[in-house]
Image (cartoon, rainbow, N blue to C red; front, side, top):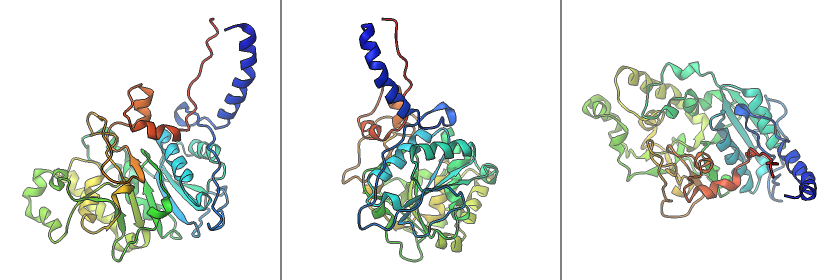
Length: 349
C-alpha cells in the first residue's frame, strides 16, 4: 500500500476504533461495541430510567427478563440482549435481571457501556448454595453452579416482580418478547414453556429410576413431556407459594445418593413440572441448533414459524464462526454479535 494511501486511511481507522473501544474491557479481555439505541413505539408505557441504582425495581416494566451472566457465555448474552431490544416494540420498557456469581463490577461495566440506556440489575448468586448438590453430568458445561441459578430466581429477585421471562445465553429473538411474556398461565401453573411430547421422555432418566416403582410413579396421572428450560415464562408468586425450589433440591439430594439422571439441571425440572406447565408455541424455542451434547453438529430448524433460535447443545455459533467452521444458521446469529474483533495493522508492505 502506498504511504499516502495508508496516511489517508489512518483517520478512518482511528474513528472506527475509537467508537469500538468505547465499551469497557470485559471479563476475559473481550471488548464489545455500543449497541444501537432502540426506542419505544408511541403506544408503549413510559420508558424506564437506566439502572444506576442496583436496588432499583420497576414493577411497572412491560416485561422482566432474567438471564445468567458470566465470562464464558458473555458474548452470547450480549447478542441475546441486542436481539431482544431490536425486535421489541417497547424496548425502553423492558427491565433485565442478570444473575452472576463472579466479576460483577466488570460485568456491570460491560453491560452499561454497550447498552447505556438499559434498565437492569445484577443479582449476586452464591455458588455454594448449589455446588454441593451438583452431580457430574454428560458434559462439563452443564455442571456449572450458575447453570442451576434459574431454579433460585424466585428467591433472588424482589417480590415486586410477579412474572419473568427466563432466557439462556445461547439464543436470539427475531420477534417481540412481549408476545412471549403475555403467555397465558392458568392456575395453578407456575411455569410455561414449549413442550415436545414426541421426544423420548424415558431417555432423560436412568434405568435405575424407571426400575424403582416409587420413583417412576412420580409421573402417574401426568401427561409428562420434555421441555427445554432455556426459555421459560415463570409466575414467581406461584413458584414461591408452591415451594418449587425446595422440591427441585429434594431431587438433587436423591441424585447424590442414587444415579437417577445424567443431564445436568434439566431432569429435576422435569420431575417437578413435566405435565404441569402451560404450553407455549414451538416458535418460541427453535432449540437444538448447537447439535447434540457430544459433537455439536449442524442442525436445521424444526418445521413451522420461528420467533426464537436457540443453540442448545455443544456447538455455539460464536465458537464455530471464530473457528471458520460455521453452520448455515450461525449466519443468523452473527449480526447481533457485539464483540469488537481483534485487529492488527500489517505495515510490512
